[in-house]
Image (cartoon, rainbow, N blue to C red; front, side, top):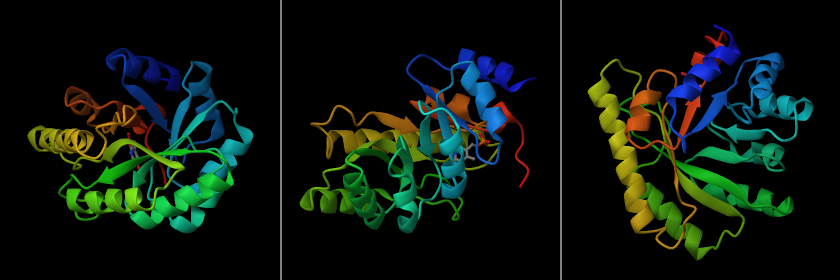
Length: 222
Ligand SMILES: *Cc1c(COP(=O)(O)O)cnc(C)c1O
């Protein structure tokens, strides 16, 4: 199937209110243009340099999602235009994002990444660490970052029950934060979970944003 057919199939399975982020990392600009042509405006990248190049030559109304691990010293390159940073996992990173957002006279939306999978290698916070970060954030009033939700990656596993429980856990972290730290903030509303192999489960468990790459663009060759 073509990129456009893949997107149409996936969009027919995603309910209203769940955003499809087309993960275009490693894929050429022509692939992004094919998706853009049928209305996709949200694309996910995980390398700063690659995102820089693509954002310069592709249409300006694309919403660029940074979905990878972001180093503080690279925030400045994407701060002028990035739409949403999905994987914030330290206070230092938030501080840098705030500083660069201020320089660009804008507010940058972010998600806190939680560690929900069993794999040690996956990045992300525990709830106690998130509470520390949010406390520091309040004390230092970071005016130009806006935390709009949470993000997580399930274990890469065939075991649906396990993956479903991980998504349930992320949803429950979201609900807890919403009730405690963000009770006065209506735009804390996003749960970014679900990739090609598990987005159906993620949606059933309350995802508001799915990040789908290979099911749209084909396997990645590194
Ligand atoms: C690559 C990537 C995806 C997309 O993965 P697919 O399995 O190709 O859908 C989603 N989220 C993150 C954080 C990624 O790095």
